[in-house]
Each structure stands twice: as structure tokens, then as C-alpha cells.
Image (cartoon, rainbow, N blue to C red):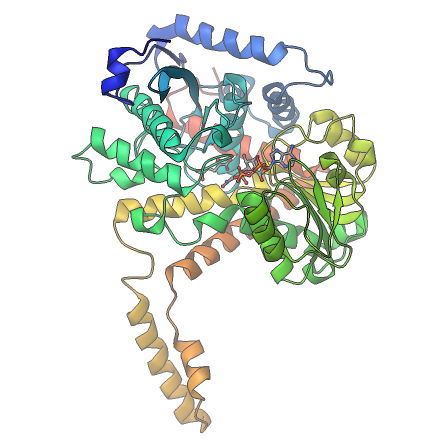
Length: 523
Ligand SMILES: NC(=O)C1=CN([C@@H]2O[C@H](COP(=O)(O)OP(=O)(O)OC[C@H]3O[C@@H](n4cnc5c(N)ncnc54)[C@H](OP(=O)(O)O)[C@@H]3O)[C@@H](O)[C@H]2O)C=CC1
Ligand SMILES: O=C(O)CCC(=O)C(=O)O
């Protein structure tokens, strides 16, 4: 295949082969025809038959929304407005493979709601990415941010590639080229839309995104805030890498501490008494496993794409991780049982099952075989509405994604605040706090007549480091959001997903209706 000259000379600065930008009529009435195009694309994708005859992801999110909308007491016009995806971008661009060939890569970004800015949400690199998946994920981002009181709208992006098929240099070109498209079409910026890592991306890609954004916006003093999940050296915040897994841990710890949860689902009230099974051993699955293990739980099963690792006495998470990284698989590690069928992980008997891989893993086809007492959704959209209902009918509790995996965006919010304030958390007040505590301890010692040991003194005086402040902010956020969800569920006798979503809907409605940008509920 001949290579276009442009490509040969400028591997990633080449012109787009085609793009379309679809913007809703929410705020921009003049672009209505584009809106219809956007909706038509989504609906077509949504209605396409699935192999399992269950609703597609976007349709599932809509179904969950409709249930929550019924108990939200929000005006139907406002509900319709909240439910619709605001604005989507779809781009295609060529990436050079070698001197003789190139491939066309497709990428998307959906902004579901811009009631608060910036819109926020990850970017995934996966061969399954399409427009409607990105729209579904963007919708979940809006609701998730509202559940944990993070003042952002919801967005999500995706590039339809399997990252394992590309070299790091090619991935860098793809990431930079995709970012260039986001820059050119106004889909990125610290006050507009701020991506983060998701499936198939990590701090490395976030660095490339920031660097590319900077090149297009070299006078923007807040450029570092255009993306979160960056390495610390590039303006990232300590604690973001593990934040989603840590949030999952905090959330499950909270729920099992509630007496009504212990009674209804027969789960132990303490993490150290739990058996845990996790599907997915990427960023979220790995960190969730680490936090459960280090707090005394037995992580008895971990599933990957090709098989499941099982040990009834509890897996050694780090050993498994190192072995997988060295060999590419769980297979061959002494002391564990390997189960060939990767889906079996969802059917292992345990207290808590944590799907942390992809959407639609639990459907009507396997919900009846789930033997966990609680399912904690670390992945986005891991179960269909039918599976959700089937699990509840069998008295299996479900802690929903929009609450449980919100730790990532919560700490992304902290990173964004750090980038806008241009100062590391703790830098200004650490010594001041330590001095105050020293004076207090001196007084206590004088009055108590006992000297503290050096180690006691150090522990009490120690001013908070950045990661400690981040962990503390995340823990507080998760505790509050779990409590708020629990209160609504108990008050209205509804499940936790409907409770979290109806709380989110009410919060978003308050912003829309109060802003005057919309019809008010009285119209
Ligand atoms: N990263 C974040 O901060 C957040 C992520 N999430 C959600 O959490 C989920 C996981 O994301 P993340 O950990 O970041 O992604 P990663 O890409 O780091 O990890 C995904 C993991 O799932 C594995 N996997 C893929 N397909 C299957 C399968 N069919 N069965 C078992 N394992 C599978 C992957 O294996 P392999 O490596 O072989 O592909 C990989 O280990 C996603 O739903 C994401 O949207 C939610 C909130 C925040
Ligand atoms: O950290 C973020 O901004 C978003 C994380 C994310 O993509 C998600 O919560 O699904």
C-alpha cells in the first residue's frame, strides 16, 4: 500500500481522514441536526441484538436510570435532559505501521453532562470500544461524580485498538494523535474535559496526553490539569494509582459493617473474616486485592482473561502479580490451583465477589450460578439489569459501580485541585501543624509528669504527607457516599443501585433547575 507523503514526513501530525463532532441542543440550539445524528447513532447501536438477548450496555444504563428516576421526584423534563448524552466526538486517523503500511484508528469521546465543568472520565484502549460503549461510560461518570460529590460533569473516551498489538512507540503516536483531535475539537482542557486512565491505559498515556495538550496550549499555566492519573513527576498526585482499588476496599468495608447488611446477606462484619474473589487483575483488581489482603481478608480467587487462580487459604497477591508479569499468565505458579475456564471465577463460593474487568460479565446466563453473598462492582457496568434483579431475588447483595468504583475520580479531583493550585498537598501546613502539636505535647508532658518516648513523640507530631491526605480524603468521601446511599435505600426500601442513582439524579437536577439554563420544573 503506498504511504501518503504527509504520513511519511509527519507520523502523527497528519491531517484527519475524517471526523464528525456531534453536539446536543442543550445549550446550542443551532446544531440540532447534529443532535439527531448523535441520537440516531446511539440508538442504532443500542438496539442492535446481542448474542445473549439482553440489553446492550447503554440501554442497561438507561434502564437503571429509569428505575431511579421514578423514585427521584424530579420533573420529567429535567429527567429527560439529564438522561441524554450531551455531546460526542468521533474521529478516525491513520497510524503508520511501517514504511509500507498504515492503519486507520477510530477514537471517541462522549460528554454526557456538562452541568458542572470540567466533564471528567477515563480513556480506554480496547478493541471493543465503540460510540455507544463510550456514551454508556460517560453517563455513569456523571452519576458517579454526583454520588461522591465531586463537582464534575461526566465524560469518557475510547480508542478502538488492542494495546497489546502495538509497540510503545506506536501507542505514543496513537495517544498523541487522538489528543490532537481532542484539542482541535475542544474536547480537552482543565476547565472543559479532563481525561484519566481506564482499561488499557495508565500514567504513561496520561503523560503523553498532557505533553501533547501543552504543545497546543503553551500559554496555559494550568495545562497540567488537562488530564489526571499522571506520574508524580508530571504533576500527578500520590495515591491516584491505587485510588479505585482502595475506594472499592473502603466501600465494601463500610457496607459489611452495617448491621442490616450482615443480617440480610449473612456476611461477616469484619474485613479480616472475609473471603474475596476478584475478576480482573489490572489496575483496579490488583489494588483491591492488595488492600483486602493487607487488611486480613483471604483473597481466594483471581480471574484473568485466560484462567483463574484459586487457593482456599488465600492467594499471595504480590507473588501472583510478579509471576503473571514475568510469564504472562497465572499458570505454572506453585501452590495455587489454576482453573482453565476464565468465567468460573464469577461462580466461586465466597463472601464478596468483585468484578473488576469489563462490562456485562454477569448476565442472565450466569447470574444463577453466582455463589457470593455480596457483589461489589469495581468495573463499570459489570452486570445487566436482568442479572441485577436475579441476584437480588436470590438474596445476593449488590454494591453498585457508580458508588463503589468512584475512588478513582475522587482522587482525580484531588489531582486536578493540586494542578490548579500548583502546590503539593501538605506543603504549606505540614511544619506548622507539627509545631502546634509539639507545643501541645510539651504542655501535656508537663502536666502529666511523664515524658513520651521518641517514637511516641514522632508518631503524634508527624504532619501529614500528600498520600496520607489523599487517603484520608478518599476514605471520608467513600464513608459519606456509602452512608448516604444506605440511608436512601433504607428509607425507600429500594436496592443500593437505585438509591445511589436517585440521589445522583436529584443532585444533578438541583444544578440544572437552579442554574436557569434549562426549563424549570414548573414550566
Ligand atoms: N482505572 C481506574 O481508575 C478505573 C477503572 N474502572 C473500571 O474498572 C474496570 C477495570 O479497569 P482497569 O483495572 O483500570 O483496567 P486494566 O486495563 O488495568 O485491567 C483490566 C483487567 O481485566 C482483565 N480482563 C479483560 N477481560 C477480561 C475477562 N473477560 N476476564 C477476566 N479478566 C479480564 C485484563 O486482562 P488483560 O490484561 O489480559 O487484558 C486486565 O487484567 C473497568 O471496567 C474500568 O472502567 C472504574 C473506575 C476507575
Ligand atoms: O479518574 C477519573 O477521572 C475517571 C476514572 C474513570 O474513568 C471511571 O471512574 O470510570
